[in-house]
Structure formats: structure tokens, C-alpha cells
Image (cartoon, rainbow, N blue to C red; front, side, top):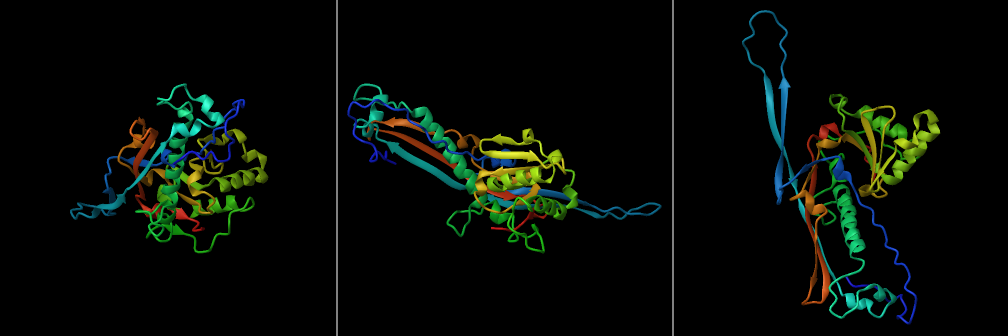
Length: 308
């Protein structure tokens, strides 16, 4: 990466203006899921299920029946990294140079706080997008949730009739249909979540307001790091969440969020990174390296509207 300063005039006794730092949105799907640390490449998600056999009879029952099943679904992680350097001397001829400390042996960057903040948030957004939209067909080493929670995964429930594109008139009905199609065994879970894009979440809010003001409380919408959330007013144990990772997609999925497993080597890798001055290249450099992959534990507990 190099500074793009071609659009700036060379410095000539100008008054230094305020530098506006662009805000980069961060994604937070990882807040809702189960995180599996220590994954270097590929590890199993171990599953355990008991199928109880109840016998209705009088007397001594001596025959044993029932099954305790063990299974696994693999989770693989991809290494994702960013490495770059800034030549701070590129600023000397521009008005931004007056913000830098005096001296030719300068190892600091006045805007280092803003610079590092954008690196972290930019990586968070990229990782959230990866969690949802990664595809092996597109060159990624694993598939994301949009591919996994779909008819391509055995067990995931897809409506027999096609869903129309979500609008402010039908999106609430679509959510209710997904809930209706879901497995009754998860009906009482507290982590039931409808995931959708942020544009569709905004349509959902309009739909609620248009139905009846009694059902819409503006204070119930939470805005956290560009993640929008509220409880579905008709099912109090269901959250509706708009995530940056789905971009402008019309995909809407419903299921227990804790059954999503995100694999990584170390969770703090998502926020920690290296920033140093390299005297050999005379540059301020950064390096961010993480590992990331995703899968779901029980596909039969997930429902998808199967839209692009």
C-alpha cells in the first residue's frame, strides 16, 4: 500500500485542514455463535445425541433399546492476512506533513490511532463477509454460511414454494414462514435467530411500523458496530439480526445461533495485530494474520429462504 496523494496540491504555506478519517464498518456475527479456538487447519465438531426408547408395558422389562449416537462435522479454517507498509516521507510535500513531528528520523505517525482503528475494523468487516459469503467455487478454501445453510446441505429445510424477494410488505410473513417450517424440537431455545442483510433488516422495521404501532418500539432496536438487532415481537425467544456480512443479499436464514461454530486459532487474533517501524525500509508496517472457518452442528435445525 502506498499513500495516494496525487489529488493533493504540493504544500505552499497552506493552512493545514482537518483530516477526515473514513469510518469502516465492523461485523459482529461472531457475537452470537460458538467459537472453537485452537484450530490450526481442520478439526471435528463432535456431536452427541440420545434416542430414548420408551416401552409401554407392565411387568419386568428386560430388553434394552435406544441409541446414543456420536457423529462429527468437520470445520476447516483458512489463513487470512494483511501485510503493508507506509513511507511517511511521502507526506513531506503535502499539507498533511505539518501534522508530523519535526526531524528526518521520524518513526511515528500522527494518525496512528486512526490508522490502526481502520485496520482492525476493516478486517472485522472482511471477516464477517467471509463467514457468510465465502465459496470454494470463488477461490476460498471453505464455504460460508450462505452456502452451508442452504439446500446444498442435507437436512437444511427449504420451503417447497419459492419465496419472493423481501419487501416492506412481505418480509414479516417470510420470517413467520421460516419459523413455522423449523423443527419443533428447538422451539424453546433462547438463541433462535433470524439472520438477514442490513438492507432487509431496515425493510423489516418498516414492515413492523406499517402493521401496527403497538408492535413497534424504536428503543428495541439495538445498533452495535453496524449490527442491528431486535426481538421478534411475536416470538419473544427469537432475535432478528441484520449483519454486514450478507451485504445486499436477500438470503434469510433461521435457526439456533449457538449451533453455528466459527473456528479460529486464537480469538484475540481478530483484534490484535503487529505495527512497527522498519528502519531497513524506512516504513511504518503492519501485519494482521488470522485463521477463520465456519460450519453448523445440526443442519436439520436450520431453515433458509434460499434466495440469492
